[in-house]
Each structure stands twice: as structure tokens, then as C-alpha cells.
Image (cartoon, rainbow, N blue to C red; front, side, top):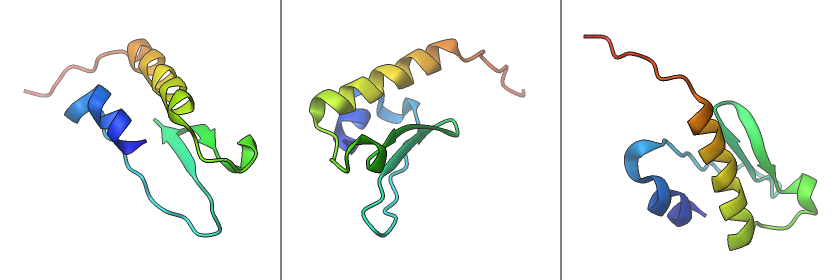
Length: 71
């Protein structure tokens, strides 16, 4: 999953993957949960599901308003 995100986004998007005990695996983007292993039958995401998550992130990134940089 990390490789797929990095291959697509490179250094343009910050991705953090942190293990949480008891088999919990969640993916958040901008504070919103976009994947919950428990909510999806306790199954780790396959490549198709990872690419679906990537599409969700793409749509959310496209909807963000650019913020001017402080000079």
C-alpha cells in the first residue's frame, strides 16, 4: 500500500502508516477516515482497493483550495 501511494504521489502528499494493536488498520486523509479494515470485513486491502483509496485521495486533493505561500 505504501509503495502504491508513494509511486503515485511521490513527495507531493504526506502519508503516514502507523501500526495500532489488535489488528486495527485505518487510512486517513486530511482527518477523514477513508479505509477501516474492521469495517470492511477485517480484510487487508488488495491492490484494487488501494487504488480505490488513491482515487478518493485524488478527488479530495483536487477539491482543495490552494493556499498562498507566506513570502
